[in-house]
Image (cartoon, rainbow, N blue to C red; front, top):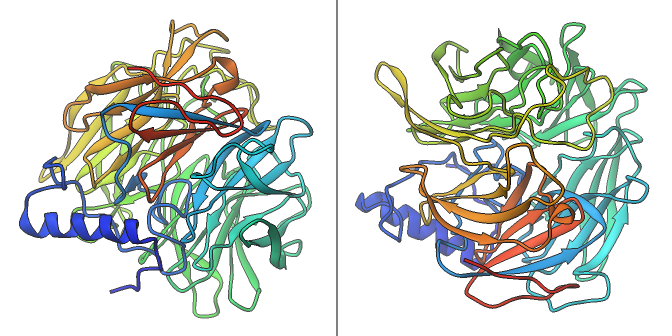
Length: 490
């Protein structure tokens, strides 16, 4: 049994309640179907569910924490003049957000108190700029078990960024210039179960940094790139390149080694609504027993994409099934994986304002954003589709095993999209794919959620990054204020 990192009392209460309901076979505290199990928390991460963009080391996009639910909610805006794809919460309740400033496009760390009233800085207690890198470099980060944000900046420095009650500071630095070639940038990073920090670069370097700060690397075949984050489980580290899915572990001398490699159908070109030519998935560990016996991703096959599920230990294919059959045939988002279920959301045709250098042209050049979500369940014979819909998710969906809801933001308007499109916070029934509750969000273009991931906090708030800041959705009616007025709807 791994040691669970120190978490807020509310988080511990939520975990205990879910564990009790599993033991009794009654599902969650709200009598929803039982979802899970999730893998045991990584002891080198911060609080369970709030320490990585995708919730945990395995990138399950599921959490043991309850969200706002399907009742009335209030919405508060945090205008930061920055796009905020990563929001994480430490054991002190403070939120650490890694954003990219609108002016200058510099990676900037913000420290936010989600319970504080409006402040002159738009909800931010403190901020710290990092060296600029590639478009995807510096997007992915995690909170370690000392509440430090771990990220790699544009100067190829592994930074551990600590905070006090009202300031941010560089606590330690590891120079990766000897491990990461000039002109390359770290795309994703994650700790393993021994405390090593693994990283992968856009150019296909995969490495680990030990406690002494020594980095050791392996290079994937020429031409393969890593354009998404990476995941870990007690079995190893999973990396999806633009050509293949890898499982890696450490050799006796601490050098990363490839345990298995499996290619996938990357299609004939990058699709509109994707940021690279290949899978858009951060690999997802999941499973009905340990929570990590399988690893899932979505390919980039022409015409119709497939969910691929492989055994973590051997790489053997468990199932391959077409998904998003009613919606757009492509996904830039990591699938949700929990128990025997996987949920996939389409991003095909989503109007990203820019793509990484070298991404190549999209074919076709553009397409309507038709949306689409699919749930697939594993069974004794492989897997089968449970439901398929055309909901237009404009953020990475998350599932709460505590309250039994899927949460995301829906883009409102025509499939052709427009700067005038609106957005709605949505609670979805994962059993049927039906929307249980929608609440309008303030603004239009300024609050584009741009397929970014949200954070469900220890107190049940839903924090969603936008291209100009963050939105907080909280259970209960009325409006909030944190630099600007919020709005609520039904």
